[in-house]
Image (cartoon, one colour):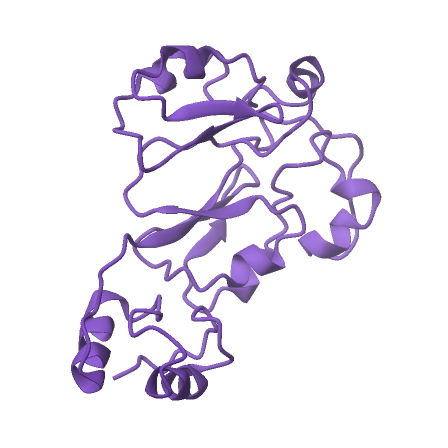
Length: 218
């Protein structure tokens, strides 16, 4: 009943190990991110239990600082790999928290769900992403995270430095001004550690924070 992807997204090395854990009662029947609800239902029928459907999560690159938005400190000319670049003075971007764009995530994705665009930013295809976590593990900048599938309002910034310094490095960064927090009628967005973050359980996608954000990073 499992898809046979052996991606490790369930927390086990492969489908055989996950199946064994389910059979032993040590893993939930809805633990396979690739198979989704249909797989969970099939496993639940086999095991004679109920499958609780959760909100599907997908990977998302929380950065908008492409080549035309984020400044550079030097031109990196080494191995075309984000992990290698990050070891050379951070990789060349003036923002040390942003996507480097050398495609490490793209190469480790077993589902062809993430690609580096012309502006040097990696972008996830929500229809192909299975939340296996491979790209998140591979990213040296921790700029890829999980968001609910279909979420329209996301803070696309990972920089936790103070506003003035952040603004010098990138035109579309969060400057922790708090305007989004002050205007949200649902208490769904707050600024912590110089970076706005969204409580997806509270967010209604009313778009007020999107309209009010002065740097358009939301």
